[in-house]
Length: 502
Image (cartoon, helix red, strand yellow):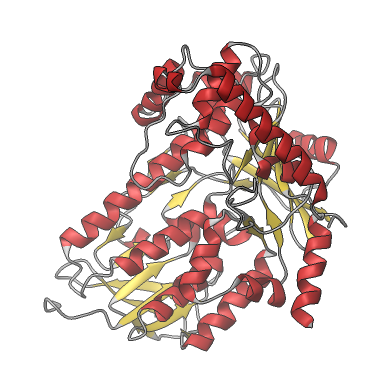
């Protein structure tokens, strides 16, 4: 039995993908006394955080925390920038909309901009909500600059993610982790030994007979959760809320002028994505196998995106493992939470779990209260990501298609039902602990998909409608004047690379 009060001294990370090397680098960088060993076993095709090179803005904070700069990524492996996602065809009678990582409008006094937009929409005198986002306008025009510091600029502050080639990104993280002093142990898992007295993991038995022991085991092996499965097989399925259980992947030639937005295109039996990685255009299709056979799905992707699937369909099971940190084993990434790539949360969730693991590292005995707190926060984050993804299905308006009718009619979790009830009443949005997406993001999707509150919020009456309309009009004019002066993303990338070489 481990004595109380003894700090963690050794960690084994199982999994040789992006998630595994990210975890190893973070542990070694932020807790230098730890001996960290990676067992780089391959992860499966369904380990989406390891294979999808599309990230949320939070990737930059994770990089900062472990000592990697944006310049390192751009200079070593290349990247493109992304400002959000263009949602196309998610409501039959509405135009496409952009979920961008920046402010929509500007607060008027102490009141949120979207409440004033709702008042103007009720009066029938307002352009689309995303036309008040400089980030969305920049994305639509395939332009990019870093945020500017001037407070009055419509580009003063916004978020952006990176697109990277997954294999090159993994190689960079591996090299960096090894540079920090992480050890790499070759081999495959032949068996897993448990301690009899408390059920903790004792060691991984490798194919050559080696016993790989540690105080803590980090399972980054994808949905198979090779280590955690030796302890229990519990899994909370989200199939009632997130319907897609198959993915098809494809690639095409990289665009000479990379767009600054990804695309999420609704189709009769699912949705497809398109994202401009540095060396290829990544495509994919998410669908329900019971409604669309695999061979027909391949034809759908070929017809709608003009690309051929690169491999057999990938089966996914959306949901989460309860108690992601159990005893001395913590599951990270798709081993803990598996979701389709809608809104690109896969790697974000993995990085968030890694940050939380480092911040809440217990002693070797695995204090119950510390693990409980880790699991509580992890659950809160995962459930709100689930809610945000289901929001897209629950509010889509494509009544002619069986897939979309069924998705819209699915029961709502209590937390999402509460959020929708509040918003549909007068535009208010609750904010839960461990939210991944801002209220602005929630409003962008809700209003973009045509969810209109029943009445306006009286709190905005302090700002006369005429004054709000004038401020909204002035903002749109500033956006329309600013965005055309910006460089294309391709030109901006060339400028950055050239400047770095001088």
